[in-house]
Image (cartoon, rainbow, N blue to C red):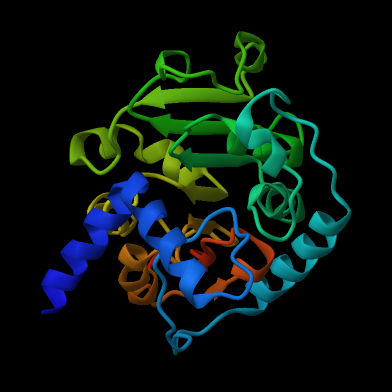
Length: 258
């Protein structure tokens, strides 16, 4: 039964059109106020027994204060997702930029570039000569829709996009030095109930590094809950100050434990 339900939820989550239609229909019956821009299947579950850390509490509290007053100016204002850039709480752009600033991160790895708005938000928080390496399967200029990037964003070397699948062993090993060197890894990829699990196994190969953070997007998605709960390293759910779909932050100072 559990596997059947997981498959149903996975089908629903992967098919956005049906997911929106089903949930919008249910909301009209269940909610008094159904004027909500996005509704997804959700579960109520208790918080994990995993420990947090003094470092996480310190960084999170500092980042929240920064995010509250922050006004991001990146991206193209004519694109549809730009209206979410400075929504806080509710979206993750301001908290991402603020975590980077609060940690004084020098190198950030992003897994899943998409429109590039997250990348540019991170760039606003990083001090020169900081660097961002963003990984994806399709180049930013080959998406089939307009990206927030322009060619000028790559001229000074602060942003570099690398194409390939980090869940594959050979490609991961080829990029291990970059991943080990990074201060923050932000994973916002497919959420297909497969890729992220493979990535956790790959992250086990990373060397411990004091202050290193892993930030996960969409941890409230049904097919991400088991993955989030499987992490035993010090962690914190900061969804109330991040993405409405869930933002989790993990302390990798002693490596990843699952």
